[in-house]
Length: 261
Image 1: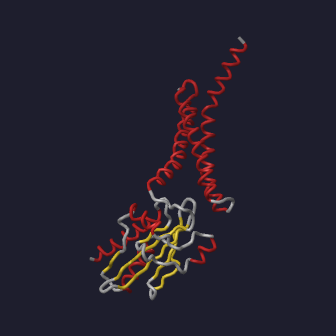
Image 2: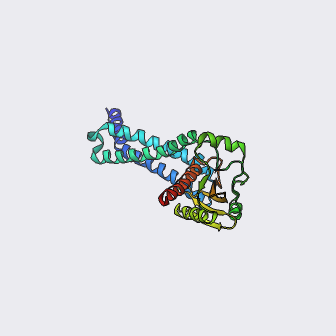
Image 3: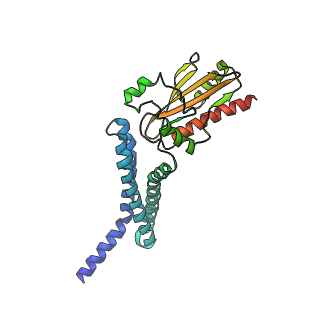
């Protein structure tokens, strides 16, 4: 009888603590996911540790929180109480959100090419000048374009990315290109109208990765041609960020041209 009673009390104790366990697992998942970018920005570790170690472990704890929460909810209000159900539901939501983040990035990685340099002119891409010292200070990726290795993958994945032709003289086209760059919220590093070059940078919100952008304005007869290049300072794959940025910039130019038409 004593053994049976002890066993029953142990089970009851486990049931009562299940919501707290689920919440602890969800909280650990949040901390692990948050530590990745915090540690990288603070210089505690390389960003790969955050992405390849902390993020997966955050997902594992998130899934564990999901499982424990689901079991807790299935026990019902009569066994864990109303507060326990509320805690379990909250832990389930947090666990699901944290587990989703690594899954989302992994799924995205499967749908975009492993490139970090996108340009509208793969044969003669715009070159960087003003941002070179900034990239060197970070030990960034080389700016030498990878040629067919990247160009072929870009054409297959982003066939719509191409130069833009404006029916404007170079000076007016440069002014429009600069205004569009400022509208994008980029940090303008240099704007040289004589050289027809605009250099800028953009920083991601989560890990704080910096990408560099160069816009080249070339005079035609008549009109002007605008080429764009966006490159990641860090990492071998950009998860499609640079292509999305180039598309957004060209779209902004296109809308400006249409609005004046």
